[in-house]
Length: 394
Image (tube, rainbow, N blue to C red; front, side):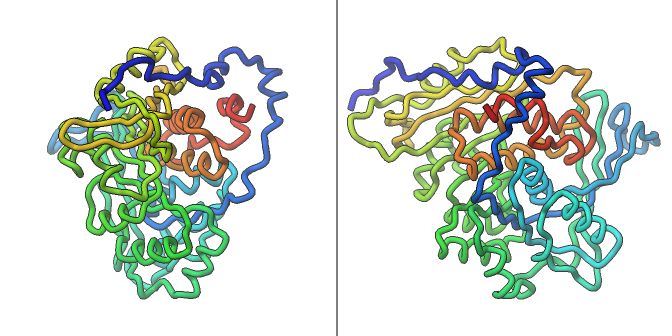
C-alpha cells in the first residue's frame, strides 16, 4: 500500500487544559471523585530502599568539602516509589522484595504500610544490610546524582515460597517489574503469565534477565535512551516500531522524555483498509499539531487505523501518541528524583481504571510533575484528592 500522509491526526482531548479555569469552589465541588477501580490490586516486584537526600547549592568538585542545604531520609527504590504512588491514587498494591532486619529495613516496611502498600509478601533477612541510596540534589541545575548500595544478601527465588507467590498473585489485575531481582522477578512473571495476568515492565536500562521479562510483557515504559540502545534502531520513533515487532505480546510501549514529555506507540488489531505512514513523518506531524503554548500536560494522537512503518525495520498496525509534560515554574521545581516512578505509578492506576491513552498520558505527566515539587521521590506524590488531579475525575 502506498504511504499516505493525509490527515494522520485526530483531535486531542481537552480536559487536562481546564485546570487553570477551575475556581476554588469548583475544585472543592469537584470532590465528586469516582471510587477507585474495583480491580485495583497490583503486585510489584523489584527495588525498595532508603534514600538519604542531600540538597546542595551546586554539585561538588573532586576533593571539595561542602555543606548540604537540606537533608531528608525517606523510602525509595523504583518499585517502592511506583507502588506508593499507585496506593495514594487509590489502588491496592502488594510488594515482593527483600530488606534486612535492621533499622533501615524496618523503617521501609513501616513507611510502605502507612501508605497502604501490602508488605506481607516481603522477605526480611536476619542478617546483612537493607538497600540504601545517597541522592545529591543540585539546586543550581535541578539534577540529582544517585549512589546506590544494594541489599545484601540479595533476594533469591528460593526465599519466595510457592504459597506466598500464589497468594501474592491471587486477585491481582496487573503485575509490575522494575528489572531488579531478575531471577525472582522471572519466577513471578512466569506464574503471572500462566494465570494470564497483564504485566508492565520498567525498561530503564539493559539489565541481566530483562529480555526474558520483556518477552512476557503486556506494557513497557522506557527511559529515553533505552529503545535505541536495545534495538540499535536509528531513532527513538523507529525503535518503538522495532520493539512492537520483537515483542508480539506488547499492547503499548511508552518512552518518557523528561521535560520533553513522552511518546507512545499503541498496537492496533484493526488491520483492514489502513493508510500507511512512515513513523518519523507521523511524529513530526504530531509535533507540529501540538499546542506548544500549553503549560499543562496534554496529548495528541494519530488516527487509530494506520499502518506505521520504519525504513529497514518493518511496520505495525497501531497509532502514535505524543504527550507534552507540564511546564513547572523554576520557583516550584525542587527535585526530579523518582519522577519516572511516579509516572509509572499513575500508568498502573490508569490501566486498572480503564483510562484511554489520551487521558492516561497527561494524567501520568501531571502526577509526575506534582512529585517534582518536593524533595525526594515520595514526599510530593499526590493523593486522589489533590486539586491538580481534579480535571481527570470529570
